[in-house]
View 1 (cartoon, rainbow, N blue to C red):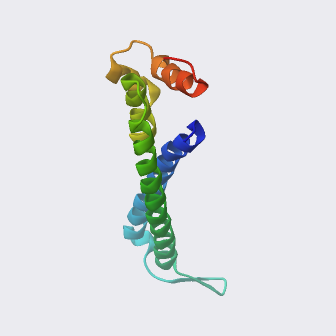
View 2 (view 1 turned 30 degrees about the horizontal axis):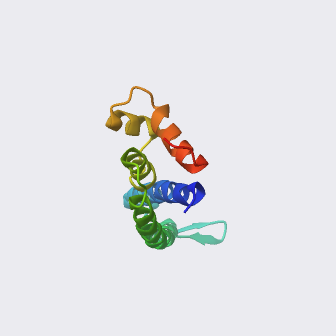
Length: 131
């Protein structure tokens, strides 16, 4: 497993969160009386509620599929990370790539005053240097 594969887990997690936010926004929008009913403008019929429902279904399907992909990748990554000999490196990798934490938050959890420390640990691991 390489850093790019691990980073995909982090970015898929962010992507899922963005789409879940969009779903919440559309659900709120769908409850608004402004979007209820069918309208006719210039000979065209518009159904805002139906459009919202269609978009919601698309987003929900997308999120469901991404959750499946994420679970597969997380399981593989967790098994790979568990094989790393150094506990501090395992900790940094688990928090960043599996838990989706920011580098600064990982540093705080480690008791480090520098947010760049966990990032350097991970970079050194991938460069093949001893941490």
